[in-house]
Image (cartoon, rainbow, N blue to C red; front, side, top):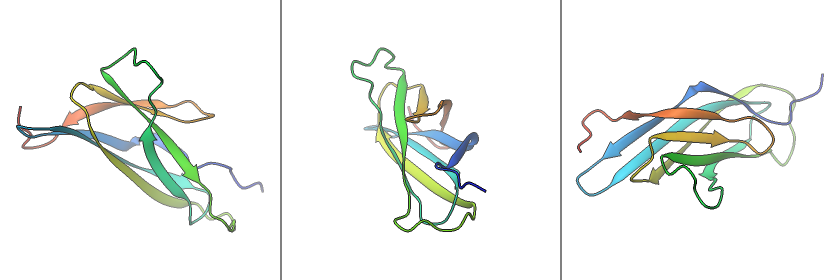
Length: 114
């Protein structure tokens, strides 16, 4: 059996929440991926495609770092999160380098102020 080269993700395992205060608007993105073995490092990083043609979308990319010593295939859930300051986004676009991504709608945080 070949070990997968990437972790697997589902939009159902992610959420994007808006947290607003009188002075700042933050977007908290969190989720999980199913990685082929323990020890994978997952990061959500800015994926600005240059001139932003859609300022209502916050673009993030999932970066994966495999463990230095590959382990036996043992599917392991790994979590990732990011907190980003953004005043205009209405959705979050999650991208991958070699796979199709997905879009997350923003949810309002309980107790958020406008």
